Length: 427
Image (cartoon, rainbow, N blue to C red; front, side, top):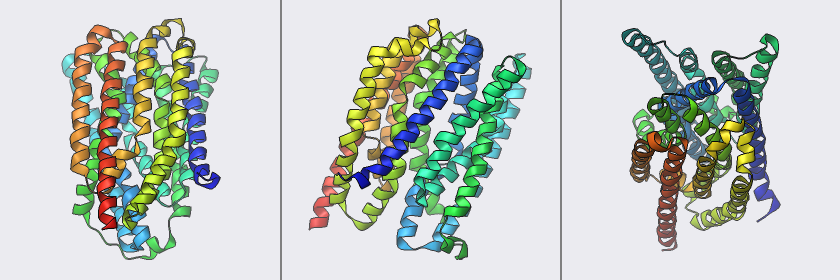
């Protein structure tokens, strides 16, 4: 494996590590300055907007890497322009409709049930169009070849802004409420969106803007469905546990414990999302060229460094997990069992994270949907069985078992498909 070939993915992993440090530092800070209920309320609001963002993206932001990379390889500038405009308009429409509907339903339900509406939740959802548009632009810039610059904005500027805003409000007012914490989180997404607009203008091929727009909306929507379902399911693995615990627990304690465990043990997932932005466009081009031998070489290259890295991380979690959770406060060490299970399940998923993307790239979207839906159902069932009885530990076990099982199935299916296509290409 050459130094050149590994340089960019290592850069992305370094950015992911720094990003994790910023987000984790902010999380510890919020756990310290907010009480347990306030910390839980903040995490419920963030989990809600992330879940809705995965739904309202319509899968188009993830499909952008596959489609635009292929269009650039084919020099199909007309379709590249058409997809860019179509995906932007569709996502903005979906997010506005969902955000307005959520706010209206929340207000009506609060009036009927005579309960106080969650201000942090409403504020977080109101910024939904900004969040989803920013996520779309990240993938646009990635497909344009500026993967490191896109990651700098998404992994560094976003958390740094959120942390800075939260710290500034705390210093200025002498305290911080859950509503203020969510407001700082929302402001950071606005900053990231502005930066991404600048990157889009500088990185898009000039031929795209000069070309006459050409659209195939039916094909794009159909192909994006697999990315949509997979994105929603992957998001719900981490976020649904928070929502379910919020519903079944009378206090915010389990939510706070699970949030701390997820933020501490789920770091390795960042390695998958960061490196997939590097390997995704490469895989797309290899598929277009039917170069499956090189595909296998790339897979081995990725495994050769990402598996040892995650194993070291998992060992560190097992040894130092209680001390890590203690940063949040003494009460948070009760989340240690959940932390270990989350870290183990997340590590397995990172090892084989390219497999579902490859299957979607070759048009096996229905297969991806089936496997992901089955794992999602398993997660929901295990949450319903264990969340009320075992709290954060039960939610952590549900996450680990369902996520790891899905990753292993995808690995087997992906390798089998590559083998068959490689054999056909020889014939």
